[in-house]
Amino acid sequence: MSASPPDRVRVLEALRDVQDPELHKSIVDLDMVKEVQIRDGTVQVEALLTIGACPLRDSIVASIEERLRSLPGVREVRVSLGVMTPDQRQALITKLRGGEVSAQRRSSFLTAESATRVIVVASGKGGVGKSTVTVNLAAALRREGRRVGIMDADVYGFSIPRMMGLSGQPTLIDQMIIPLEQDGIRVMSIGFLLPDEGEAVVWRGPMLHKTLTTFIGEVHWGDDLEYLLIDLPPGTGDVSITLAQTLPQSHMVIVTTPQVAAVKVAQRAAKMAEKVNMEVIGIVENMSGFRPAPGADPVYIFGRGGGLRLAELLGVPLLGEIPLDPAIREGSDAGVPIVASAPDTPAGRAFRQVAERLAERVPVPTR
Ligand SMILES: Nc1ncnc2c1ncn2[C@@H]1O[C@H](COP(=O)(O)OP(=O)(O)OP(=O)(O)O)[C@@H](O)[C@H]1O
Ligand SMILES: [Mg+2]
Image (tube, rainbow, N blue to C red; front, side, top):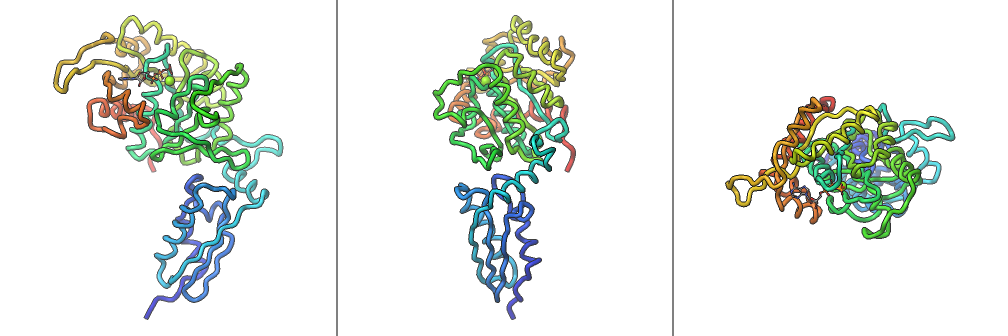
């Protein structure tokens, strides 16, 4: 005897397991399931998309079909798609934002109260590897199963899209921006909003401030996000001020080269943190020893000891030393962080160790 078909309650319960791939929430909780009809063994579902041009519509349909087919007594699943009305969409956005603050002021996605741990990656000068460290730490935390985002705060000199191998435009649902995703890492950069990578951003300060507050308040990072890494531009205080005001729970990691003479310059980042009241949680020394061949003695092209000296001066831990390794640059250029492509090389391991120490210093609540 074949199993009897499931009832509506059972179907909805099963659909609870289906997530909207961009919003990372159950389609039932998002009120995306409009109709369920069960006749004999045939289950018919009408799902509502947020926008008609939803790029992931096929994947939503496939997930619904797969989930319902696994129910006993189901012989056929038919899925039809509709589109939310503007009112339904507004209701969904309000729900995702955790409720309306007032008619004029929408609540931000990321606030001082959010449980997301915010880590700002800074340096005293440019080109020391902030962006490289940011993407590799993100990849390392992700590898440990953490839910991670990267916010590219280097509006004028953005490099995160290329390093993460991401291009294209984010989906907009009314005023809500959906971050792009790579290997489960949610990413937002001004680069996604410009016509091409070679485009220059020529703005005055207020626009910079507006961009960052938009990235914080209007991007749907998801309330399940555990770590948000923020890649800072070199040497400007503006961005840190905006971040410290908007996300006062931010912690700072300072990247420096091993050159002892560069310590003074790196200290500027610490001064900046102090002025905006941000806690420095550790130092990453980047471009440390270079090994000309596996097993060969390292050559200290940029000197030695800078990271440790800075850590001692500031009274914070040295989170790790990242070797100088052409494979790191190649990974960044190719859009695949070395932690993702070669996690067990010395460079991959060095980044993972930094991520581990970082997570110890700024733990997320155990689930
Ligand atoms: N450990 C390393 N070994 C080899 N190359 C590296 C290493 N770290 C960074 N690089 C390379 O050095 C260059 C500068 O790195 P990156 O862009 O990450 O620095 P940055 O501090 O973010 O620079 P900016 O201040 O311009 O934003 C890049 O080409 C990157 O691939
Ligand atoms: Mg950079």
